[in-house]
Structures are given as structure tokens and as C-alpha cells.
Image (tube, rainbow, N blue to C red):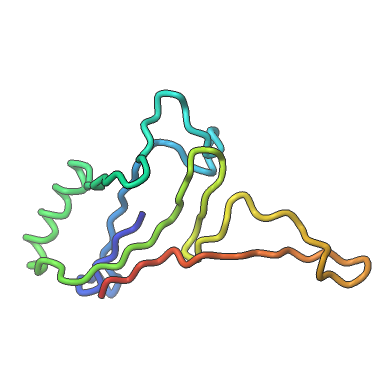
Length: 126
């Protein structure tokens, strides 16, 4: 997940930080499959994502050096949402993974088309 701070910029670029839950990606060797020792977030359970120590220290150093204000607005973008079974969503537009299989239902004779349904993956809080 990418957290954006639209009020804070470095050289004209919005400052962002990355946070994650779990160690598996849809695109690494695990192919998004959870291991038995992986602990999932259960339905209705709350989990607080935090910055790792290095990122938190870097934030404090930059904030002090550049005199950044405390952010009042944030944007959240899910890079990947992995369900642990090899499926999920990825990218800023929430494309499904794996891609849907080709559909011939609406295709012209002899042609194939992809039906791609996307979900909005970006939550803007400003």
C-alpha cells in the first residue's frame, strides 16, 4: 500500500511511504499463495499497519530538516491486495489477478476479446 501526503513535496513530487502486511506477493515465487504459518487478517478483525523503524526514522529526519507540517490529508493506493489463494487485485485501478480468461461471448466470429472488470483501488482522503 502506498500512502501519499499531498501537502508535502520534495522537488515537486508528493511524498509517499510504503507499508505492507505479510511477506507474499502475487508476483513472487509464492504466486500469492499463503504458507500454513502465515497469519491472516480475519473477517471483522482490525490490523494497524505501521512504518518500519527505518522509514519512521527517515520521516522524522526529513520532517525536521525540511520543516514539514504534520499531514492533514492523505491518499491511499493499494498496489496489491492478495487473498492468499493466488487471487487478488493489483495496480492503481484494482485489476483482478489472475486476469480473467478470454471471453468469446461478445467477440466477432473468429475473434477473441478480454473481459476485464476492475475495482477502484484508490482511496483519497483529502
